[in-house]
Every structure is written in structure tokens, then in C-alpha cells.
Length: 602
Image (cartoon, rainbow, N blue to C red; front, side, top):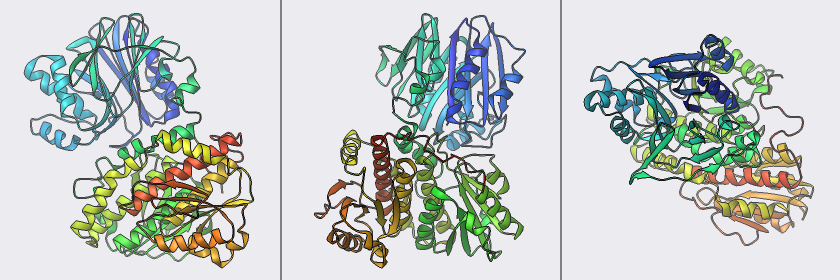
């Protein structure tokens, strides 16, 4: 995810920015840039790819006098990773960096273009700098212009803006995306997390949503909706690794908690008031397409299975899901009326990439669902949908799976719109459910504490069965995979109705059953399946909005009005359960043995 660094003072600014951005590399990025105003001279540098490229561009530049500076690492959401799309974005006399997504940027951009404002990039961020300059040109008051700009933005943002009309001032605002201010005497720093300023600042203030203001003359002036306000600085931690984890014990834990926020980014600009929109897709992609084949591995395979249920039920289009490593060698029959979809977190999964090349050679149209723009699979595909999950450091995928499932849900409705297989009323029901999804992904202290307590019951035994029906079957597969990856305990996911066809022979008190029991889909059927296991003395952990009297442990869910809302809420519970069991067993949750994050070999 994108990273921000800013500084105001007389230290060497280029190095402060580059070193700070280096500390944010763990978040993932595809381009980077800096802008500095010093001695009335505005300089900026941008580069795609790694920071080494930006460092090479700036090797002959120094900035040791008093000045202001902002820098950014970008993870593409709107527009490809190019120098034009890289931050900082330029107006006529100002620069801006921004994390998050401006939901109403298209409307604002159109209004500005009607006033003859020229845009150079494909990004939502550029809208901010043009709004500022448009307002300043009318009133000649820089802070009023910045305030007017912020008041027009809808969505998530953390932003820094500098301008030649206020060459000793950094303007800032925060809403939905993290940003902090660091202090060391008269030196003032800005960053999207602690790590860029550790060792430079000694105190810190963490901005709250809705706060904005400006830094000038070694002082920060802060505002919110009620006007100017005071604030209290805190000592800054000195542990960089801990700071990267934002207080969480493991990156995986942090990424589970991030899912609510990244899901909003996945949906922004795509889930509209009464329709689903993918700017990156051309309707011609779907001409003469009568069926879909999805290829993926591991966690991505589980999201693909989830998507297949949705595509056939809602979009009314046949959908077949293949494990990429098997697909490559089965001599598959490939028909030209098939849309070939590949799903990969990294975009470098070797088996999935080779499957895509086979489909291309057969003349099939292709679409990739991926988290990394400019990756091999994205480049090889005709079209791509980015999941916008940001980088995952934990090997066991969490937010990548969640965002893949959401993209497939949105994609299903997009296809249904084109094929007219969904009524306006049905579409609105689905969109209303989507809008509530981020709430289902919020982790409460009460829920996490309960799973911590329960986890001590599940450290032994001879195995786990995760069971579910319909879309909750692939969720059961994913829950079992998460547990086995990081706990090293044997776990299997099963369709609940299949237990009686053999697996139930294993049932006894040392077999732990994690039962996904949604009330919105086949509740009575799965209840009957779980009762069969309970009758054989299996230990039952039931996850459901409805109390289940035969459960040994019970996690009550809240969102029961739509299957996908239940899906995402139960997903978080299975992730946290795996996490807590593994921590109790003393395992390295982020780096489980024998596994790699990106599988680039067969």
C-alpha cells in the first residue's frame, strides 16, 4: 500500500525522504517520487520500479538549506505504474501526495475539466492539487483554498500538499488513511507510519480522522470540524520492526485487522449507487463468451471456487474451476467461447502463469485477478482487475483472499448487468450487502479475546474438519488451509453433506469440527450434518448467528441478512482461530516452515 513521508526544516531533505521511503518498502509499491521547495526553487523527481531508480535520478541533487519536502511510494489503484501516474502530482505551482482513494474524483475531475483544467495522469490524486489551485486562484488565501479542497473530497485520504505560494508551509489532512506528525525541536516530519521517522523525531502525534492543518515555522496548527484544536505529543518508539507491525504481534494479525479498510479500497469507484463499474474492463471482452474457466492455486483456488457458485447462480453463466498445476497436464479441451480467468496474489505463480499461456495459445480471451500490477500474469492477460489489498508480509494469505472473493462477487454482478440476468431490485440488494461488507470484517476486542480463550482447547487431538455448504464449502477449505499452514496441525475442509460418505468414520472426541452454519443458506441441512458428527462424539465449534445447543464451543455471528456477509464474517473468525492456536503452539506465524509467499516454481 502507498507510503507518505514529509519534512520541514534545514536538514538534508532528499536523504530524509529517500531513507523514509526505504522504510516503507515493506508495504509494497510500484513507483516513487519526491518534491522539494528550497530557496523559492521547486524540484521534483519520479521513477517507476524500485527506489534505487529514484535514488539514481537524484544522485546529483542536494537540499541542505531550509525548505519543505514530500515523498511517496505508490501502489497503483487508478492508472498504470508510470512516471505520469507516480506521486507527487503537479499543478501549475503546487505538489500533492495522497494515500487512499477519492470516491468522487471522477465528478470533481469533470467539473475541473469544464473549467479548462488539464490533467496529466490517470489518478484520482491529481484532482486534489487542481482543486487547491482552482480555489487559490479565486481567493488568494492558501489555507482557505486547502480547506475548501478537503471539504469537497469523499473517500479515504491522507494527503500532504506544498505550493510555491506558501513555500515554507506543508498542508496536511487525514480521513480514513493513517498519517502522523513527528517532532524533533523545530524539525517537523510527516509519515504514514512510524518507521520512516524513527531515529529522526523524538515525539509523535497520530492524526485522527477529520483532522487537517498546516506546519510552518517549527509549529503545527491543527483543526477539525469544530475549528482550531490543541493536541498532545507522545514519545516515539525506537523499534522499527515493531513499528511496522503497528503494535500487533505478527504481520498476519495486522493484516487480518486491515481487511475492513482494504475492502473499502477494493470497492471504491467500482461499487456505485445502483451499479457495478470496472473502468479497466471493455465490454468487448465478453462478446461471444458463453462460459468461464478459472485457474488458480492454493488460497486463490478457494476464492475461485467461491466465485464459481456466484457466477452460475447470479450471472447464469457456466463456470469451471481448475487447479492450475493439474490443468497444465490434463490435455484440457479449450473452446474459443470461454473466458479464461487466472487468480494470483503475486501475479508470478508459476503454474497459473503457464496455464494462462496455454489458454492464450488456444486463442482464448483472458482476464487476471491479481494484487500486483505489472506482474507477469497481469502483463500476459488481455485485461486485469487489481484487488488493491496492498502487500501481505504474512505467508498465510488473509486480506488477499478476502479481496479476491470481493472482486469475484463484484465481477459476477458486472456480468449479470451485461447479460441482464439480474433485476434492478436484486442488483440493489447485492450492492446494499456489499456496502456493509467492511463492517463484517471489523475485529472487536470481545471476539478476539473469546477466540484466544477458546484456542487452548484445540492444541491436541488427531485433526480438524472444517465443514460448510455452498460458498461455505470453499470457505471451509480456506479455513483448514490457514490452520494447517501456520499451526502444523492436520486439517481438512469438506462439504458438510459429504461427511457421511466416509470421513465420519474418524469422528470421536479428539476430532475437532469447525462448523460454518449460516442462517441465510441451507441452515437446516448443515445443522443435520453437524448433529450426525455430534452423535459420534466429535468436538464441535459452531460458528453461526443461531445458537446450537450441541456445540461444545459457540461463536455467535451478527450479520445474517446475506450469505456473503456471513461468509466474510466467518472468514475473519477462522483466520483468528488459526492465528491464536498457532501462537499458543509457539510457532512463527508470519514465516511458517517450508512455505514461500510467491510460488515461482512448479
